[in-house]
Length: 195
Image (cartoon, rainbow, N blue to C red; front, side, top):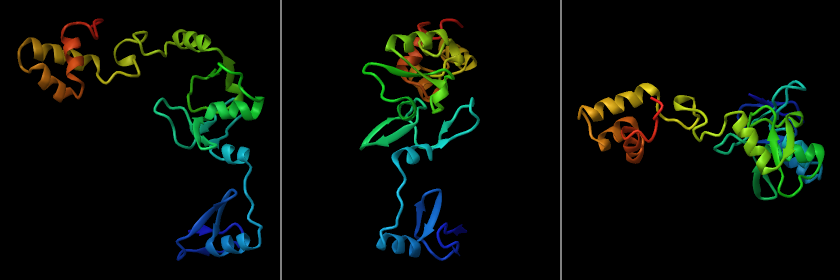
């Protein structure tokens, strides 16, 4: 049951609740405040920080909103979706110079804690990724690679089943849920060649 932060009443029968400041207001209060021009709006900064789970000063502040596939927070600003850690940096430190990246000290893509963010070039970002072994381009082998869909055991099974003619490459593709091209590369030793 929701409680209106304006009139403090709780209604279970109302379907229309409105997000307001740090809570909700009922339909009656919403229209009353709107009619009298008293409806407060959050600043853009307040709106942004309401979507961040602020914790301790040195902890990661997780983005609570939508995310890009890589795990970075997705924030809509001026009808354009941008990465939330960049917005956090701009709010705290000012504009980001052209051709500069905002990097994470903590390697947590959804972190928005300004203390965990720093500026760097694209080259700095790439070097940081390689040093921390987060590139996914062979720097991390097998199931340790974040992009891997298979385990070492599954790869051994694939090779065994293909070698003993228990299944074709197309059948293995269906069984293990990976592309036929990847199955071909596995059985020919071009992928997972460390096993």
